[in-house]
Image (cartoon, rainbow over all chains, first blue to last red; front, side, top):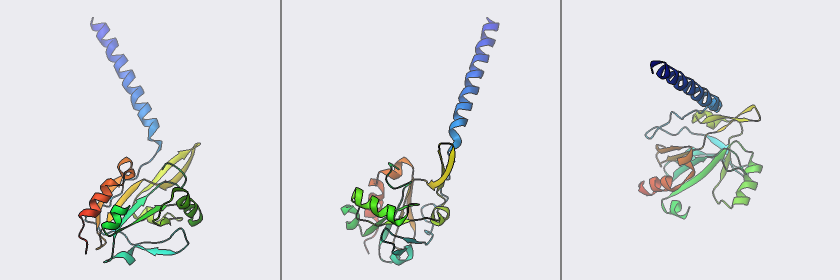
Length: 78
Length: 101
C-alpha cells in the first residue's frame, strides 16, 4: 500500500509538471496590462484618422466624453 | 452608437493599421466614428497596451484589446481589457452616467 501511494504521488507530480509545462508553453503571448486606471488623466495624443486628418485627444477636453476602443487589426475579429 | 451620441460622447477606434486600411475597414463594417492610426505605436506605449502576438513563430507588437472611457475633464472613467472590451455596453453605461454638461 505505501508503495502504491508513493507511485500515485509520483504520477500526480509528473502530471502536475506536465501541466505546468503546458501552461508555460502557452505563455508565449506576453500581455502588458495597462497601468492606467480610473481617476488618472488620459495621456494626450495626436493621431491620423481614416481620412489622414489629425485628431488630438485634447480637442475634446471640456466638450465631449471620449471612448477609446483599441483593436488589434483591421479586417480581423480582433 | 446612438446611445453614445445621446450621452454626449464620441468614439474613436484605434489600431496600428494605416489610415488607408482603416478607411477600407470602416467602409466594410459601416462604422460612422473615426478610426485612428497609431502606426508608430506611440499611443499604445503611452497607454501601456502593447501586446506581443506570435504568428508562424514570428513576434508582432499590436494592441491589447482595451477600451477606455475618458470624461470631458480628460479623466479616465473606466478601463476594460480583453474580452470585456469587445462588448461596448459597459462603456456606453459609463458614458450615460457622466454629466451631460
